[in-house]
Length: 95
Image 1 (cartoon, rainbow, N blue to C red):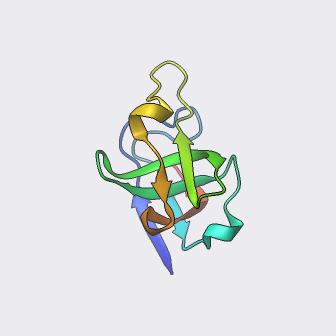
Image 2 (image 1 turned 90 degrees about the vertical axis):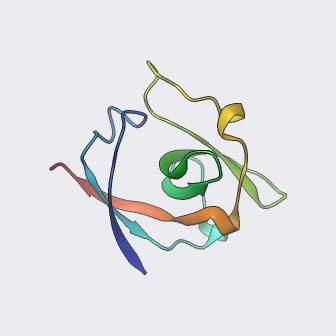
């Protein structure tokens, strides 16, 4: 399944800008790797776009934003599960 989403916010600067569009493809958890940009459903923040920081043996993973000037810590975001993973960002474009 393919989804097109619009980025809001500045947490992924300079990789993704506010207003950019991303193409998201459903991605099996077993293919998830550190460094990939993914879309997840956060219990706190809603649907978010972040980079995979770590994939854990217990089937969870942690995320980080690219914007070093305004970081949201991994602790604040917490761990994510397979069920929260919408997919991997395979391409993006500006407005």
